[in-house]
Length: 187
Image (tube, rainbow, N blue to C red):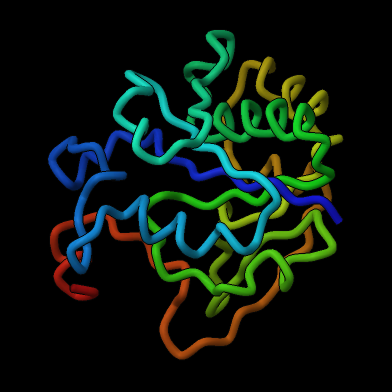
């Protein structure tokens, strides 16, 4: 099963003062380095979803995918769409997505989410962007994004038939580090 992985690094990080969350440090390394280290063994190819100057990621040697202009206001689903398009060009069958602010996800995530489509669940809470998307879902996702409505990731997951996969670790492995307090809790 050919899996490509996408790090979603396009958020505005408003609760962290608008900094580029990918470069916020945890244990002396940027968040993106933590996520990359966990994804490298789980996917055949990797890319980063981010808008703005892609040169800031040059040190990672990965493709940086900007949102398509038509989907610029669609939030993280615009990144998923760009990732699906890129994954198709990589001849991958699946796209594993992971937010850059989620550095503790399982080293076996791709295996546990397979076969997709699927989405991670912990303690009854669905982690919408810790998901395995079928690359074949791209046309349907783009059609979904063209409609005039709210762009909820949970709705897109339901549309592609994603099944929830329960993770039972004591501490939520999909915890997002969104605030200075979150960083302090895990630092």
